Image 1: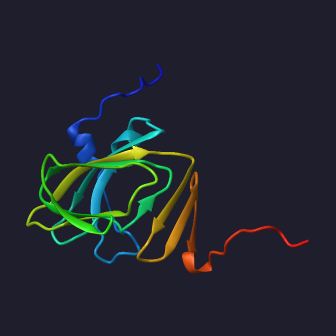
Image 2: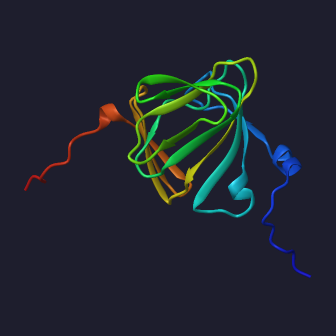
Length: 160
């Protein structure tokens, strides 16, 4: 008999699937989380459960060109940096980054884990900027390429 597709993810399954990740460009980055949407087969939408320990940060200050992103704070307190401004965030606060988005980043400013849901689109192609690092990421499905913005050259008419 074939296995029946699962449409329900239980609390313990979420806890058991948690993994820790640090962004390689930010030594203060440390998150534990699970990609709940992927566990149940969502391909076009991401829904993630995330914890950031006290004194740590999510990833690195970045913006998206194609994939919309959102964050909903469940517990703890943090500082959201959005378009160069800092905002205190706490349970019940919601952030949304329609594309093309402004740069954003989240850090834990409290004494307990900062816990939130995060999600957005999973498109085949994404472009993201890391303005403080002057880098741009191009992702085509699972292939990722990083470029220094200082290497960019304007595209003009071809010489004959």
